Image (cartoon, helix red, strand yellow):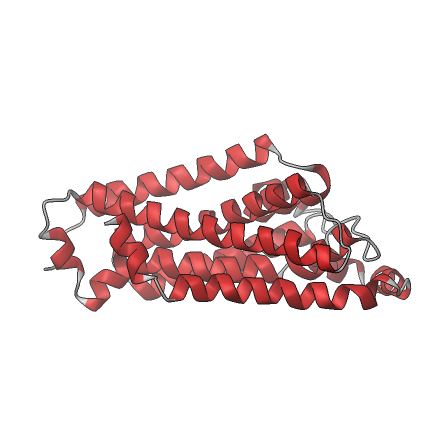
Length: 262
């Protein structure tokens, strides 16, 4: 089931990887012109505090390679693209099969529902890890061409955090699909949840009544520990892995108990 699911993505997954590599190439190509413009930091400082909190990681310096990548790529664009991939894949894992009328064929095999679901999860994880690795390698290899000199270990720490963030919402989409069998719901709810979590993390430092809730946002676990500057955070990874595990458990239990129309 795992290899079959990956085989079904034999065109889409390389396309996603190539798109991410080209996206990184675009930002790397722009870097030399930004590096010599100290006015970029002045521009950031003049932005409204709430806007800066939403779209620029705290403490990032656009004149450094790390700060530039944080602001231009990792603060918004990369999470957005990864969430599109994982929520789409998660929603399609069960609800998409049911909507296409192919779930009955899967259930007719000797495989248990639990195994079907867990191997679908495995395909989602492997696909996400592949995309994160492609982006990390592209940042290091293409960055060398523009003298960006990004720290290798911290780049892969950031990619690990990015993959875990995406898998939180991918697991939510999969759980909703497994429990309800409704692909539209499986895509829309994680999308709304991601927007709310992003706003909560961004505005937490500037809106007093949101501050106590900021740490519960998956985006806080992704960016709050600043992996590109400070490296890997075990605490943040454990929180994300625990969230993913709970959502997968809900998916397994819900799918096992649901009466699927054949």
